[in-house]
Length: 319
Image (cartoon, rainbow, N blue to C red):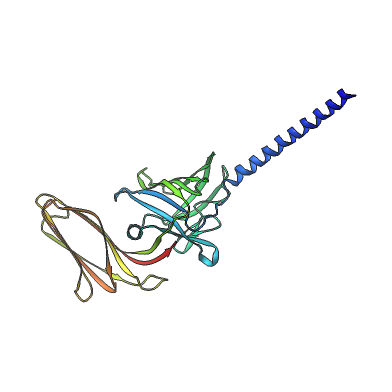
């Protein structure tokens, strides 16, 4: 009789053990699936990225959640921890993941419309479409492994996006844009991430006003161009104009640059003599209005000048 009771207890224990294993497996599957649901960001969450482009030197920026209540409580505001870096990103315009990001799928806004670069829940084989860099993309999840989901997107001209979402950090681990010839146009790589950022953060809403490059334009030549500074299409007057300059002179060359407003008041002047070089110069011009005239004079045969000008409207938050 004691032996029969012992057998009964053993059966109960084995049944409980099997039930526990079954329940644990189900919980594990649910957890794996939930890893790739849309993350919930909190104010102060941050990600440190290195941005690489073919035309400009690499720069590093800390992206910080400045607000969680944009667009009537349906979007975040993603800002930058440095005003200088915020201005740089506004004038170079190579980072699409700044400003408003939707709660529903971390959608980035392009031309006022949220674009689903990610489509949650991320599941292997899922596909969708979106617009980014003014191009149409067809995307699909090619692989899920551990905490990462690999997404590939292609456009009709042969360009390609390869990006990796990391569920542990709640954002991209990497993001690469290549043109139809395989050349890299943009690469974002995550360096670090965390929570609870404190201090001032900035978002500069930019708008392209002028961009041109002159490489060995000829001996003793003057180039003149004009552009009109009008308001932001929806947010009114710019707070400032932001300029970005790269200049390089050969040993027997020189460059002079002047930017004047409609009253012929000089807003910007630069002179580079033989052998001089100035790369990645960033600055601002206050009180933009009306028409501007840019004059560039080149002497000697080996010269390079690149000028970009953007309007900027700055927002800031203290965290």
